[in-house]
Length: 185
Image (tube, rainbow, N blue to C red):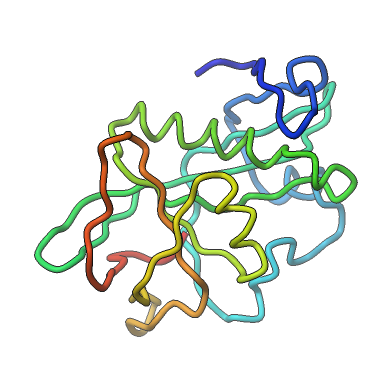
């Protein structure tokens, strides 16, 4: 995985100011470095859901400071009679002072490039409705059907919109209701 990027994102020369790296460790301390004391940077704690931890973490550093993160984990889904693994994207955060500069794109693309390298054909995410336009600009597609997810005591319908992205040009998302055979990510 390259540790630098030479992309221009939304007019920002990211090669000069930022460096994307795979993080060996990511937890509460690293999250605080990015968002400060914001106890709910994703805005989803009020949903009362249990989330699956990410296994792969990518950070964006400005000089020696971590300013953005995206993580992913392999999760199984079923659609009709098909069952296959996808890269469940989550934990996407950008420092409040740097939002709106296209930095989320850098860590999300790094995370999904890693998932593609691991052989996964699709990415899947859940987000607040007001963040759907951001992910659409990044090439993600809204799911038409509601998604069933696992929680510790039951299977429920995910209250957040789901989105998918092909990690290969020829990959087409199957039609039909989606069941995440896992906790959400």
